[in-house]
Amino acid sequence: MAMALTLSSSVVLFLCILAVRSDLDDIVLEQQSSESQSTDCGCQGLKRDVTVDVRDENKLEHHDDANIYSKTANEGPHETERDIRSKLVLLQGGWFMMGTDDPGIPQDGEGPQRRVRLDPFYIEEHEVTNQQFQHFTNQTGYITEAERFGDSFVFEGLLSEEVKSTLSSAVAAAPWWSPVKGADWRHPEGPDSTIEHRMNHPVLHVSWSDAQAYCHWAERRLPTEAEWELACRGGLQDRCVCVMSFPANGFGLYDMVGNAWEWTADWWNVHHTTEDKYNPKGPETGTDRVKKGGSYMCHKSYCYRYRCAARSQNTPDSSASNLGFRCTADAEP
Image (cartoon, rainbow, N blue to C red; front, side):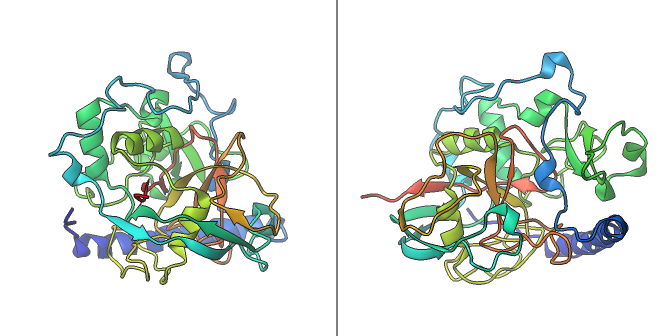
């Protein structure tokens, strides 16, 4: 699919991001005055638990299958709809070194470095966009978990003063994040925001379950953490806001790090061995799913996670203003 990029809007948004980062830097400096060192932006703690005010009728049980809200969500797209899916790039797989022996954030389980062998696979050249996700919801009637819960997590620096005045709670360990009523993929910064001029931006506020549903509809799947990391190690590690605004890496993939966090298929685990692995898929069960790539909010001074080996986690029903995904597909044997 040919992507129409609006570079002028990306410049404006880049300036906005600079302002947001400045605000976040101030917050972090204040936090570090009482703590010896911070390695956290807090986005791995954005989980739906008892501290979040959720109406009883909107509470959802998590399901691993993609058919959650719509009977048509699992149907493959019609021929005309397939054109909206991202271009797939074939990666030949093979052996590579996963993880690192010099972890930026040791408690995240970035190490030890180990040899991993993967079969060939396809991966989308960029993150799923608002335009693509809108096609999916238009065709299936799918309703995201953020829409059903009635809120999603947003960094306070992105909110209007009007929305800030309505906030009633925040994340205890990261008070610059708040569950915002009316925040969802169509309203990234709350009910008074829109994606009207951001259709080529990554879709945000999608849970792991939402990402699963889209991938299933598109006849694709989420990447394993190993597949994602191999794809990331293809070259450049540019950060951006609009998709495809910076050069692709050596594999022809865009925005693998520092744009939006991307869901993977794997359950979270921080204990790894140095044994060689073949097509690893993580633990069989867990409570959190792995996300990779960091986001536009990452910075080396407090959240050095915009690296290929870096990793973080959230519960499968979590969603936030810096969390998206891309799909993969098996290569033909």
